[in-house]
Amino acid sequence: MQKEKLRAIRKQKGYTQQQVADFIATDVSNYSRKESGDVKIISDEWDKIARFLQVPLEEIYEDETAAVVVNYDHPVFNDKSISAGAITNQNNYDNIPGSVIENLQGYITLLKEENDRLKEELKGLPRGKK
Image (tube, rainbow, N blue to C red; front, top):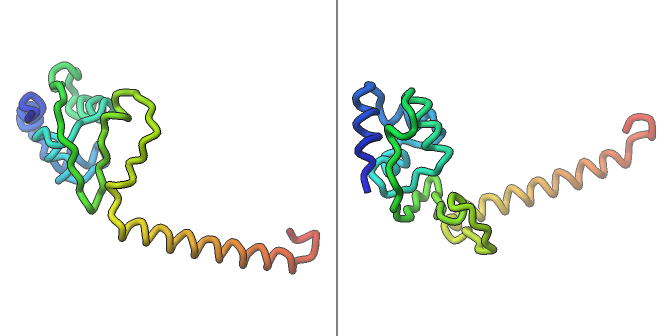
């Protein structure tokens, strides 16, 4: 469901989607999907947008029925469990591209090696220098 009230007030105040996206710390394509109703706007974002537009939240807020959308540059997880306050044991890692996971695993390996190297370096220092 498109956020007509939000879009109308944003345009009326002369702001671009990019400016709002920057304020809520997301990319413009993700914000565009939020405004068009494809991605859910979470409570914190509604508050930030209202503050940015300098309007009461009620002037822009519209109910959510968003679909889950994955942007492989910036993974967007299903907001339902988080925004509804529900606690689940379900992992949301299936939306993370394999290349991102591989990159992070490589970085973890590098950090472990650096940690081991620094531990060895510390062993060689005299007691008072540690």
